[in-house]
Length: 419
Image (cartoon, rainbow, N blue to C red):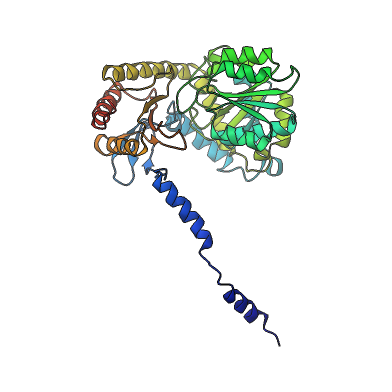
């Protein structure tokens, strides 16, 4: 009787199979990443209760002042938000249990979408599991909905936008950052009734620059284009109600699709898109990143609605006033000490170091010697030669914290000849 198992073993032995061939792919790539100083080392930080912007290094026990968090208004550790969320968890449990289509859609999600639509004075809204997924899925969906459209995208747009554009399979033009003349030139190449989608961010996360939204709105009207605006780094911080830079500039009604996040100024998790009812209903019907994933937990949705309302009222207005005061004071202190930061007029403050190893060492010394945490930012997040520290003040930082930061920056940057 023929033994098929023994034949199989003998055949495989004769082929000299290399069982390590796949691991070599990983190790080779890792080696290259480490050689290029791009290997990501995570900092062990524990945040607790209402201590923000202080966190604990769980390896050393040191208490660090955090200067690079996107928890812009401290809502992730706000006592009112925490208390409300605890009640929401008791009410709804901790998870959604599945997709909205199959497992049912909680009333808290519908309430959140209604709250978001009213915040922007738009007809409709939809919630995603993250801001990244909101961008990627919505832009990909636009490729199915408007298959003959042309995309015009700022070169500094976020990775989620870039991947959404690729997935959309739409032809595209990438215009130089905030270059209105180049955008105008590209748009002029197409007939007036050729569908066109301009995609930009209101405030760019690595530079702190703001899109020239008034000019973009004017150009979009001239060329019959729609505007897709990513507001994630402006939500909560700008505008009377905190909906973003478009509100601050009085342009919300002239932006066709606005994308935002619940994970930064609102301190939770999730992303969203607001637009017309027809637009949102269609995206809901075709966006795979919405259809085929577990919904955000109902307790998160209910707490998000509570937080949005809190940030829209006098509490949020007072936080925004204090935030602007801290930004102004920090920049003045940095100027006094001749610290070479880039001031683009908003809350994100980059210091260009220009070398990955130097940026890493500066960040490390600030953490170990001065108990200050500022994560260095290297390639590929920023171009080579543009390695930097990115400082983000919040309304919860004190004058003493700001003074200590500037003193430490002066000493360490001088040590590495940045000053």
